[in-house]
Length: 476
Image (spheres, rainbow, N blue to C red):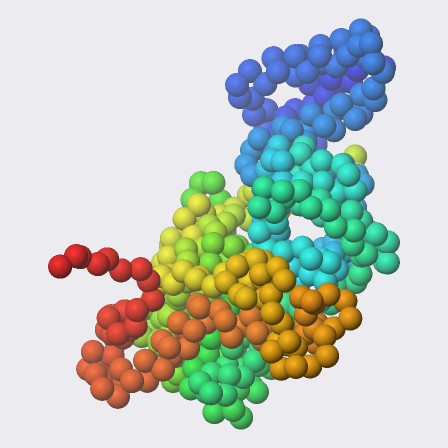
């Protein structure tokens, strides 16, 4: 049977009907005419093309392009691609340890949102903001995000070469794949400010357990403020975000619902159980433009309940990413599958965050220069030791000169991964703002109790008391 016969057989199958039904086929936009065009194109390729090519490959690539045109997150999987997706969803797998934001198939690069602490990418030098353009020398244009991720993962201890663009320059990294541990959450006690700092980097199945343990430990520390950092959190398992919300909100609080393309509500999610956060101290949530999907849902849910139930809970940072769609992976009979956007998420107030995101209560822009940029500046400018042939400290103190060169500098002892991260936290301007807001909240409750009796009043007090954003200046 040639390819034209195959298409003719397909045309005889009622479209949109299952066996044994008498429903009328759904036909739109001259669908049969398009099928004839596909059949003729494939026939010409088979009979006249100079280059021999598998028609199966042509059809799969065509289906990939077709499904990708539906929206930015829909995709077609070949049998191998589908199997890789199933394996990744099943649990941990060896990879390089990066969080990414999905790309369009025809995009040239895949943006790295964050490198997981201690993972191969982090230790190898890949940073947030890098744009992956090649994997093992092959350009990723034409590949879906899932296909790029499949190329980055592989057998344990094997290497993969990743090419990124940073500051308009290509950089190559050879990384060894490792099993990436679950580091979706971690916490620190900031004793000087009596504050519990919790960072959620993604929503895995274990995230709610981590969150519960952190909140329980905070009770013994007598914390007067909690900072929940969800910056650069691309999302994850929606059920995990709902369980996390249950640790912060009363039992049966609405979290999110889903709606189909007819705007009909399909499902509701609400909290279950007793919360560990009781609303007696401020909870300050940090977000940025890379806070996406499940992280946005948790943020929007918390913001809604803070306003409607007068909780001392405030969202600060930058507007979030705006991904509020649900993708369903649908297996096909031939071993392939499609990932299709089927639903949209709606917050408890009915607002859909798709292409909108969450607007923080208080905008706080990061003002700290990234560590790698700061080091580059310090190496070249602003210090005596940056000058060639400078008089060294050894010369000043009369100590013996180093053997290498006059301007050789002693190497500083290397800090551990934990020490490096704590150092970054200490210089983070957004965390500084959150710590200040936590202290000012207590001040407001003591000095202006009437104004701070409501969420809106407290927010007004915080905004007029703490300078967190740019301001205008008028010349005298």
